[in-house]
Length: 307
Image 1 (cartoon, one colour):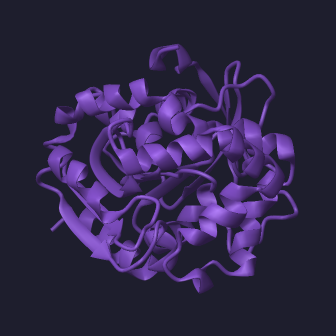
Image 2 (tube, rainbow, N blue to C red; image 1 turned 90 degrees about the horizontal axis):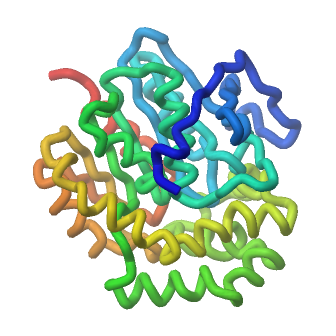
């Protein structure tokens, strides 16, 4: 199924219920919802002045818009900060029968973006947020005019022996058992991807664990992306083949240099795709926005503030 097949009409819904497990001190935002026709409802944050320059934050796995709370709080005074939860994640719906592949998430993300009729968007992507969000940036007629990348990817791992080995394990039968029965994505992989595990406090970890208490959800939503590390290689290759469309975009790369999941050598393809990008290297793990929120917020602020 192509990306355009997933671009369906969307209708804004004014507000969404915040479940009781959400820590309102850590996540003090209003949840809004959009119904993607035939797919389900996406929850999203929309903070700051409605006429402010828009910044759109795209999360990866196994997280949700909670990932971006520090940047939203730090930038909403001057910018319109928007962060959707992908279908199945966070506060969004998790319908049976929906597809939870990167291709499907990318199509729904574009439907959401089109429904909001945004212009001159700064797109911020992390982890799987890259292949999910970047099709909108590759579209020269789309609204994305600036790009920020944090520890992400947009190419196939089939020719990368180390990444392919890890992907085969996570996306195979043993990985499926670990995801279903041990919640490996959240209880094993996530903590191991921090350079300083003390930064993943019990309180923060609880906000990531709460949406995935059921075994079925860990398979349909989380393991689906682990399987897609190799299973969606053709989709990633298609993005990489279009990388020239990104070359002239003002870009910022923020990379956690102690990330065992996406090691520093994965910076090289980004430097090729974004030859004019500013690069900020931080001594943190896979989630720079969690381990170094002040540094990341300040880097993004400088990038989006006119000189």
